Image (cartoon, rainbow, N blue to C red; front, side):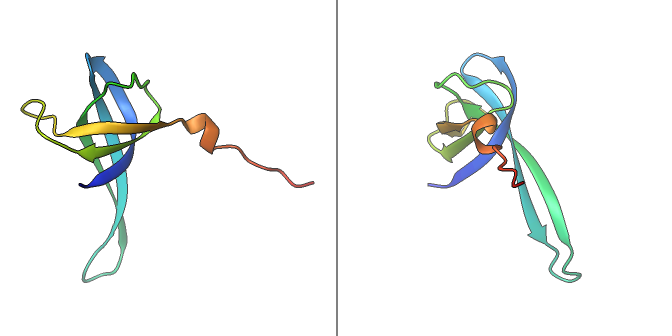
Length: 86
């Protein structure tokens, strides 16, 4: 099963979250790196909030547009700790 990591954009629907995934693709001819952004409708039973970083995987279809399920919530505040050296 395919797994992706993204950031929750919207949480307006019940048990559904809109998640944005960024990835970098290299152009085959010009070798320029291009940032690709894609959003997914994801089934959410964990109760995520807007701005949370989540890991989700493919699964059976829940509806017409939902074919992904959230596995784990990775909060942004925990990952952005910066150590300053003096």
